[in-house]
Length: 285
Ligand SMILES: C[S@@+](CC[C@H](N)C(=O)[O-])C[C@H]1O[C@@H](n2cnc3c(N)ncnc32)[C@H](O)[C@@H]1O
Image (cartoon, rainbow, N blue to C red; front, top):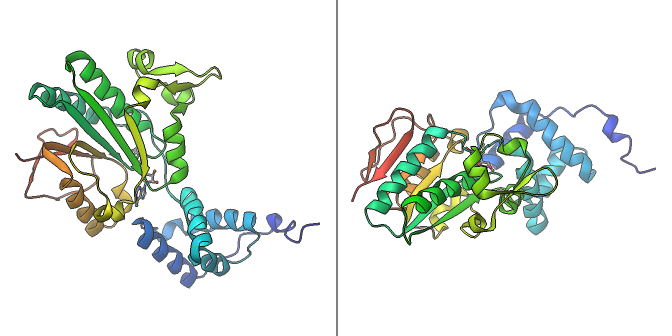
């Protein structure tokens, strides 16, 4: 009998305030995510589940393991997948996508030949593929020889693997309109769909921690789409990240956030878009 086999039946260990503070500090330092005190029980559940898999019986022992060398870094990556909120869906905020379509048309009309879009915090990819479909439609109807590319980034490797795969259940694409499904999604033979090759060729998925934007060589974006990511961050951190994203826009490029992602933020190079259904800014020039 495995020495830990009776463990699963044991109740959750209570996490002390000091232990909770340590975990919260680590999470915020490494990902920016602020873990509220009213979610302590949830943290206990998630950590305990992983600790049971590893045969570790106390939070401090696990904490020390996560801090230790290359093995700790691997473990951290695994744990992050379980602690981050990866909820998403196709065309989650339709007015934002409608605005992106309109904006891309204007970019093409102004002579832009290659459109670069970035989904920041793309989770399992639904947002990135929605952007790709939006751009493909615009380019297809008025683009001539224009092209486009979508960069999709997230901190979670597991979420990125799903995103890159481009395979989704029929239920998760139920909200995608019939014409787009017909153009860009293929039946996968198992009741689900997969993104067509022509669209997949336009997308690139990469692990980027938005706390490390200063070391990220991404520039020249027409559209930066960042929704439901910064809401978990402190206000000063949101501002700092937004300032760095703004610097990665082309002149005339657009930053489009989730409504309520930030209030009262302004940037000397950006002009707010006058549309109360969305939260977007365009770079001057
Ligand atoms: C709620 S999902 C939002 C997905 C999508 N943007 C949407 O609105 O549907 C938040 C995503 O942000 C990612 N995330 C959290 N902290 C991050 C960080 N520091 N760097 C990059 N991505 C991060 C999470 O892994 C998660 O996939």
